[in-house]
Length: 216
Figure 1 (tube, rainbow, N blue to C red):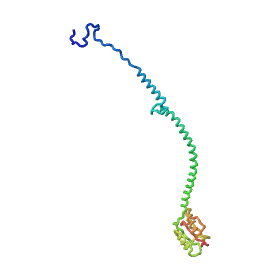
Figure 2: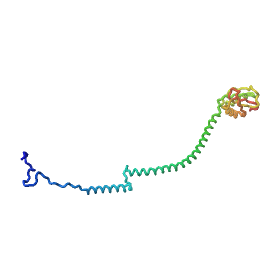
Figure 3: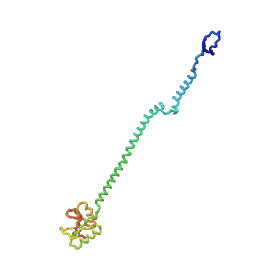
Figure 4: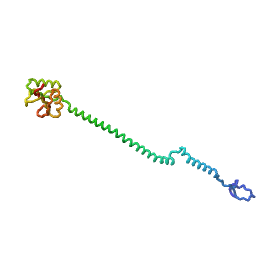
């Protein structure tokens, strides 16, 4: 006999042929493969339907390889159309630019001609601040004073006024010093009805009026 207390495992019939404690052997549980196979078949069918029919209906998720392939196929076709549109536009743009450039060039020439004409006119403007000397080369007394009064009355600045002491003159002459005084000499000639104008550097005055015989 053992020194341990008796338990339920010690309660074995004495006439039993079994010795020790034995448990009833149970069959190992069998896994049912039918449901698993059914789920796999259904999933495969859903995948095939999604792959074959959904792209035709336009239901393509963003970022899928199918969408990337479609965009890659569309991009080459888009670039030739863009190049074709650019080439079709370039010939039409060049002829339109050339006719528009021609009038603008003519207008620029006309404007340049106008602008160049204005300074030339200003350069030949009459400057009445230039002193005008009046000399009497005739035998008519007081003729220089009378003509100088006419010149001053027209706004000109007066210089020396007196009798002419140089060579005898055959007609009335206006002497001017340099091309810049030519316009002034012409204005004086119109005022005094003198047509002879001479460019001379012999005088210290810019404008010299010498009254000759026949002056009225």
